[in-house]
Image (tube, rainbow, N blue to C red):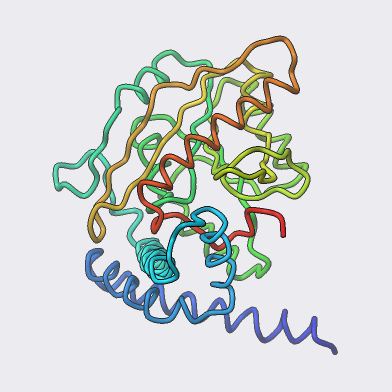
Length: 296
């Protein structure tokens, strides 16, 4: 019995049990209270975690004129948002984006409805901003269930728990990998709709400008859109105050069509990164700065 056995047999179950307990505590509170507690925990303890060094490095690269004090303010805001997102998972099933309770302000609903009524498939994409899970709710609750691809958790107990938490988002979820890619292609081929978060680093992606420097960017969004000629719809989630949000669904992006597939893929992803950069500059504390987005 070695370290692997200890991790699988002891640490993994303990990690899952702690997560289950935290989610039960969040679920026992009203969503506003749970979000507030999660935000306090995030901003109180997150900045001290070793992983936060990546956020500080990324912020120095993206905003070279930002003072150290301002960077720390963004870091605290980021952890506040992450703590809230974690606490809100237990309440995803209670969020109706079209309810009159003011929880979610939806801008651009007509863009979802047009895509649904036209049929033929399409791609909704977003970034890790605000509570990004709400971006999928607007499609699901408009009668457009999505096919998602995601990075599976290393801990199989946590993975099963996360699957249950994503259930209110609707649609189907496939882990990243060759099989997941085949499922995405098959879904579009059948005229279905994809939901993609495309702001993370992919080591074997393509170098694409982001905040003035190249970042390795996953090209799958552009490759699929150009292959199937389907609409590509940006969706943005902003946290307004506490557990209240603005969800903006934009008209489909204009895609290049020069006949040079590699150039068109690169240009599409340049436009996507430029759009994300605009969103992030407006609310930097709401983006997930913890990824190693740029090369060392």
